[in-house]
Image (cartoon, rainbow, N blue to C red; front, side, top):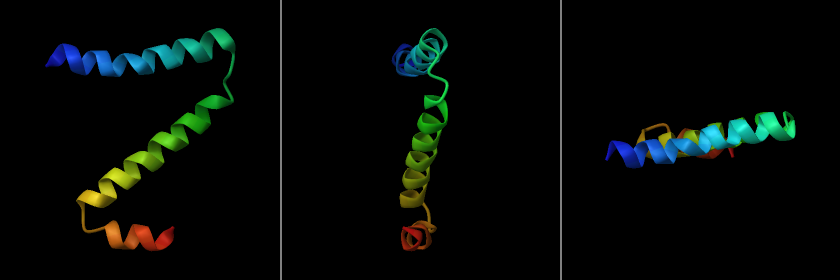
Length: 57
């Protein structure tokens, strides 16, 4: 189980190496914003904050 979890986290290492090698630093804020919005949606579905967050959008 731990091996599968670590393999899923390997995508972050590959993204970091992509940014470093290709010098595409402007993509980092875009990816970070997408991850934050994704986490917001996931946590909003689990909690009582869902109705309040959906009214924002």
